[in-house]
Length: 247
Length: 329
Image (cartoon, rainbow over all chains, first blue to last red):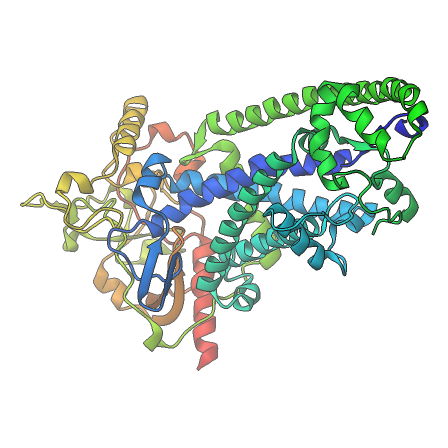
């Protein structure tokens, strides 16, 4: 369609296939629900007036604790206290949507060839460093890219691995007897909880960076995640062309 | 990755071009076209006509883009509304045992899947007794009144030939537990979520829970003993008139004793290694399944403290523990 318009200085490119857009946006409320319901469950042990000696959810070394997660005012603000049943109910329902959506994404990405845009390449690490320096206004000149740059490739692949880690550690906590081999693999029940918690914190960290980057990248980029199409200068490397030549 | 290795095509590189186009979309040709046409180094004479040609072509592309944008945002809005509707459906569904029905069904489905996969054969890891700690006191819900120890009974139902047992009774649910009045009105234990130095009132369940329990009492017209309003009815709650045994603590202590050190995992997320002792009822014949409260309309039932341990699943669990213990010797 846009290719035919040889005189145009811009073209419309299908950046994100419909399936990927759906799976991306399904994750948004589902992951929100998982984190929120997780917080409702987690409050039971974290907000503990008696400070029972678990060493899981804190920043500190040995006996020294800098912060315990999370402060009382945060729980009060979010109406977290005494909602464990609600939290468990939602957590063990939405985990299915999260798991199935994630597995469908991996399957689709593998079979459609979209993984070529996603997985880090040999040059991705140095590209990512360059992208980061440009973002911090320390250097100029973004490296060449088609759909994603090196930093995006690394970040988006990591977040898929983190999702898989959430499922695996979650299963290790959920069924520590039946899946005892998995729980043991993670270093036991306490460690599985530790990993589950810190993976969640990493997800939150990812969101912050992701949202800031989307805001900085602007409307054209954001809209592509909804409509799929991005307006590109005619001589920019083409995602559609890359898709055709590799497939 | 990219096969055409033209380095920065335009004064800005291709990455940041993405950031510029949104403005171009609103005011199409004016900003974008002239900028890009400069890079393929057109001769100054052609520049004007090229610019107008590009302007028309560009607005065609942008029109196409707007069409997709409109369509997809309408779809996205519909999906968001449907998603919210889905949440409302869950949240507003009538409850089953303290959970909205869809979430309750998910619990049951999860349990069925887990059982189908593991067939209940998996055994928890065991530990050395030295690793065990005293199980921590977590809260006092259901324990605001102290049970008189001599009035404690274990209701054991589903036992074959129970009628021949000296502790047989025609209705185990009719047993009246006695409670001791707490003289000083102080809490008998503590809720770990509340400051140990807080006043008694502050150690009670939060306002929202008490008022919900109050509403439940209003709507069903039955008063639940303290503790049960949080716990809800149990799947093993017995029908009035269920025959069975009422065992005293001495009866139980006389049974074969089995010990096991496993990790206790609380749904709250914490865990502790605990040294357990259990008394297994000798299984000489297949148990019979008692009639449970859930088998008929719950509104006609009365609420009492009950303990029932003998569904067939529990017996097989005890049997599994026994197997495990004997195999280690």
